[in-house]
Amino acid sequence: MEYIATLPYTKYGDKQIAIYDAQDEQAGFIQRYYKNIFDKLFHYIPIFFLHKTNIYGESDGVKIKFVERSFKDNLKKLKWDVLVNDEPHYLEDKTKITTNVRMVYHKGDKQYIFKKDMLNNVCEVVNESEQSVCAEIILKKRIPAIVKVRKKSDALTLPELLGVYFMIYLVY
Image (cartoon, rainbow, N blue to C red; front, top):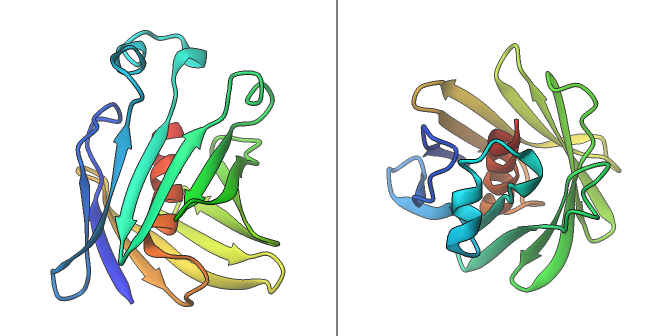
């Protein structure tokens, strides 16, 4: 299955991002949200540790919420709690160099690695235990950022895939 979404030009916006399928019908959405007005105002101050990145999304009855952990938990590596229909999972950043982005999504006992290649604008989602590619996220156009999602298996839902990619987009 292929899906297309247009990411916002500014990273601070909280506008809803529609996800469309091959027949141009809306298949879901993702959206950045702020807990309060102060969180939104802190993004305009260039002090990085005040920034919180939270995302909400929904598709086919699957509701997902990414909530950034506390400052103390994020001292070494960034981490998020991911709630998929109120079932807890987590996402952690394994990036060592900014040009070689790696995020690990822990879903149950499985780990999915999001590998973003800056040169050919492709993000591969690999199931670590089976060493198979679950999905590809391709950046078709930079301004505005239009992404195409190719799902190869049903291991991850559409809001999980685009939610993690949108998190990579916002952080890096």
